[in-house]
Image (cartoon, rainbow, N blue to C red; front, side, top):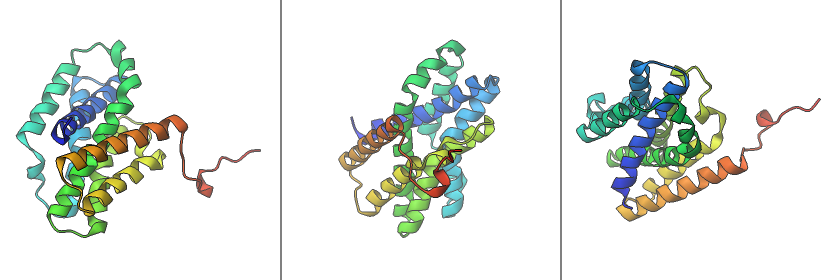
Length: 201
């Protein structure tokens, strides 16, 4: 499976995650499209603002077509099938996290930015859409509750900064990120900062 295929899966996953969150919130068809589009493009909008790149450049025809086909298909799915997304959503969402973070890092790197900006671009592209999605759905953003999401986007940025950019290398990065995220969710990994400790009375 090549990098381009994984990125397409990531685009579909992010669009679908926005749509299914909207369905869980019992939003209308408009809500499904709004959350799906915001999840797919919200992070890229923030990234382009930070990098001073025209926002109009995110409207890639192929990406927009994939998102619209995904969302149009989902509106014909009954709400009772949402639980299937709950079962497999983390896997596909992890592909989206990795591919979007890599995409943001690649853009910043192509503009000859330093490591700090590449990291910021990777974080915003990988996490921004999901944060906006959760806020619009009225729930705490998952990316802000678990550190592993941000850590993995930073890992993607470091790999791009280190010169790993061939299709095979990008594919390997995605596989590693997906594996680590699924393992972290399964084992409930958290960084042991004092603010994360639960007080026992």
